[in-house]
Amino acid sequence: MLTLNVLTALLAPGVLSSVLPARDLHARDLDTAGALQSILNNIGTNGSAVSGASAGIVVASPSKTDPDYFYTWTRDAALTFKVLIDEFIAGETSLESTIQDYVSAQAKLQAVSNPSGDLSDGSGLAEPKYNVDLTAFTDAWGRPQRDGPALRATALIAYGNYLISAEKESVVKANIWPIVQNDLNYVAQYWNQTGFDLWEEVEGSSFFTIAAQHRALVEGNTFATALGETCDGCDSQAPQVLCFLQSFWNGEAIVSNLVDNGRTGLDANSVLASIANFDPKGTCDDVTFQPCSARALSNHKLYVDSFRSIYDVNSDKEAGSAAAVGRYAEDTYQGGNPWYLTTLAAAEQLYDALYQWDQQGSLAITEISLPFFQDLVSSAATGNYSSTSDTYTSVTEAVKTYADGFVAVVNEYTPSDGALAEQFTRADGTPASATDLTWSYAAFLSAARREAGTVPASWGASSANDVPTTCEGSSAAGSYTTPSVGSW
Image 1: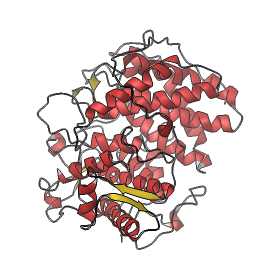
Image 2: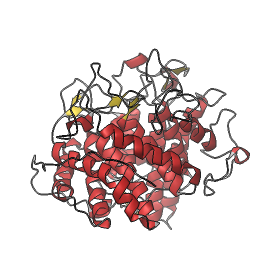
Image 3: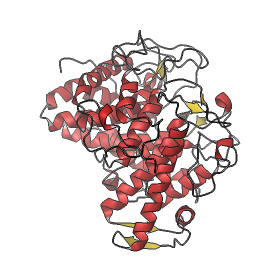
């Protein structure tokens, strides 16, 4: 069985010891050490593939033509550094200087005036991408994109919490809190305004964005308290953001964008949001769409099923077997193909769910999640099953096999050198679109860690799932200051 494991001989010193040893690896399997190095190759100034990029800047891809991804996106950079920060906290100490370069770069970018606005009223924080030399990208684009500030806050809070635990609170207050405070104030002020989704195509309200904003406000409030600071907007707006998040659920699946765009609404947006909201200490909570929740599992099934009949590479992939998946079934960008990162996300949600069931010692099958489970175990029935039961064992084994199957799909269509592009073609799985996509490698590394049982810190989901009776389109006025980074 193909699984995400490390070729031990290739591991660099300091790579997590908790990852399982190699076993039965396909010849084309990418190892975690290789994925980590491929990420670092795309980060300035030392990245071998991105000459000219400023220190700490994540370049989306070295590709400069068809498509040109030689820019830095706030969203992609934050997601990538959240993975790297988790790696650092878990033992990869060599990453700290790169993380500090990222912090310094973000302090500079927050102050760059751009087509979305500037820092005086926070509007410029929603600018989606910049040139790799820290200057504004001024061409036409889908802007604003309101997920970036929330995701950046989440990444920086993870590093800040580590430093607080190491008794470096003064460093956090000087170097990290001013950046995070701007981002949190932005989220509290602008969360209820529409913007472009993470695929930069749809203008409306995005599930991924709203979920990221809720998490950032929740953990931001806790972070502020730990520093002796306050985040009144976090406290007042988080419940309302959570209230609005429920609007995306249609009874069977997540409608990823609340806008009439002629699509079904089934979109990788939802699976990516679920894994971004994963809380290892959380319950199978429908309200925050935790990976093991009935809502997230029902959505997972319908999302994956939407690709079974439209991709030639899925011609033999019946319900209950892992398949190649893309952004959404109606996609036409670069041919509308499967993506490596979305197929890995389908696996990661299930690894997260397995971890959560193991932690709580049971799993529940409800009417909502029953179709998901019946695809994997035909005899599955509604009920609560203890980890000591035969049903629990058979169901979790089936889910693990299913999750591993998505990784096997990625392995099958990964070239012999282990390079991960953005997409692989729907016809025969040939790598397509941007080469060496940073997010693809980050998705692999994240999924590998979850498969191995290595998880990030809790962000407090279980204490932030009380939905107000009435949703209000409120906001909290924010103030913004130019951040700077001094000595570490």
